[in-house]
Length: 366
Image 1 (spheres, rainbow, N blue to C red):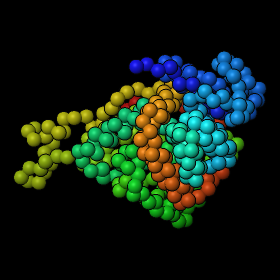
Image 2: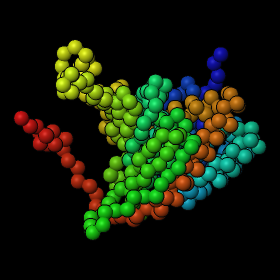
Image 3: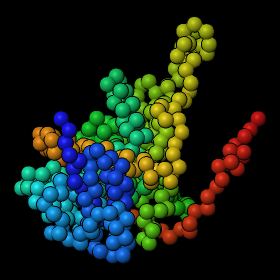
Image 4: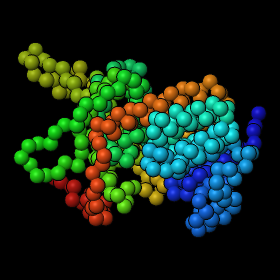
């Protein structure tokens, strides 16, 4: 049985542009029915370019809207996004809200969703990126066969919230979690340390977390030394997400038998496990340019989140599980941020790019 496409309004025209592209890319599933923004020139032109009305208040959004994508800063980052979400939910409009969202706001949105009989989900975006979904699928395969011995993760504090979502999924659950205090920097050194290092437990798995807790106050979306890098270790080897956008690497564990003299046997019968590559790429061997990330990878991830919300709409029994997971992620994030404190304010210059061809040439050795 086919259904008419769900009517979607996108609130916010900064990162909301990714949501607009996502909705427009799946016309059999969704119809863009409007943009909700303050009414500035950019928003007026953007709505006109998409051929949809511009609404300047939640009250102006018509009742026949099925889904509101709230891509406006929440109270956690000083914006009205959660108030917008609650206003929609109380009217029975289903809401997908962009992270980060404080736990008190998530709880308030879940109450509003219950009042309006609507579905509510927080979109942490990054777990839905194709390379990270490949990493998580491989992690699930490994977890079903062997205990996870460790997780090692690094990120910028701007994307720590979704990192915890990914780590919880990789570990098979967030609970129990705990975070230690950041390690002290070496004594007698004037060299600044860009990363804070913490030991943690997530889902019962030992974790090391390194966070670049720095932000440019005038340009917070730039100047991350990296976004996400994660390694998961089990007895068979190490699974690594080299970057937020891939690739996913597998390093089988080196294990060689010994002969009667105690020396390692490096070839011949009994060493078949040594014949495999020391590193293999899982899934896509090449990554996309950042132009393609903005145009395809991120909108595709929003579509995955929207489809998850649609399943919650169709199956109300799923909503409580989605809500509990969203609460767990935001509470873990609150615990982590309480440990690392406020970010250091930095004002670096625009980074100088390095041509790949030149770097590749420099890496050539005999």
